[in-house]
Length: 339
Ligand code: PEP
Ligand code: MN
Image (cartoon, rainbow, N blue to C red; front, side, top):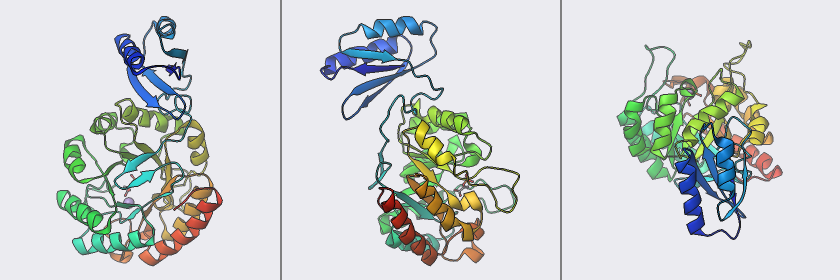
């Protein structure tokens, strides 16, 4: 349920309402909006109707309304305005078109520094790179681990870009949090509820990638695991789903973008690299994602994709990335966003 406060309500009243919400067995998430303060009260209590009546009578309360969607804190019912949050020196969401770019995997100091500087120059706002890689085969490159995190941090600091990197396992979370500005939860872990809960508690911004067989409603509930831990800095990433089609690695679900934008206030990022699997299709799908309303893109860029240790075939060369950004800027401007 949502407890809507009167515009005249005091801080003291707010505190008392939050106390009551918790006493009845709900978690309380306070959102101070432009015109109104609301409290999201989430929990599965049998006496919900009675609690709603009691809360409605407290001083400072204007109304108590149920949230009808299964996803609560992420829903537009809970918060109608688009969410924005900081990742290092950049803002994700709102009018900003976030450009996440970098290699699939961090491979060496020269590689990540060169890519970081070139994507920054082209307009990227967040540097990506995997140090813990979820590979289909255990015999392929698994990532550089902590050494990779150190290099990614260095490349981020030298280029002036905040960094995002994937965490695969709860046991590595503290380590990844030590270096990263934003935590990526990959497609294969989208429904790993233990990991979601742990990352929710870590209070770092999160890039949550859609599982390859996760429906949109399931995806929203995965995000809810992070939000329910009090972490509201979550961006959702459409990265393609499994279909019968084999001409591309995945099928980028363009529908998911307007559907998610309708159902949630969280920023939505499109990943046309994993969404297609081929560099030739990355830019066209990137443009489509922006036109469909995405708040940003996540793109793989490699200075030498032919010898990349992972996902070379879907990686743009720095020059192609620069060209893509120029066209993306025109589309972003046309729909009221800025790069
Ligand atoms: C990645 O971003 O390199 C990655 C492994 O993505 P996904 O989890 O979407 O497959
Ligand atoms: Mn990849």
